[in-house]
Image: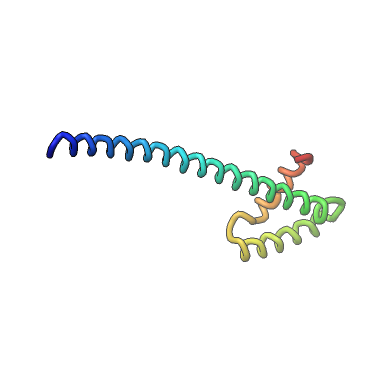
Length: 103
């Protein structure tokens, strides 16, 4: 291998390394933005669910009525969307809304 081939190989490695570093920065920033957007969306979803449950089911209603509605809602949401919508979580959404009513 002559000197020109060696130099070209070194330059190629430097360019590849620089490109790799830039690619990692781009990917990391995109992932961070995506995680932020997903978290923000889930927070809004949970807050809105808590608000609707509080205003339409729990407020000024009999405790037994609200309990039955939440049990049925949790069952249906879990069937449709999978875990994460059990009765306990629905109550947590309400608590979240009550603690932060002005989001």
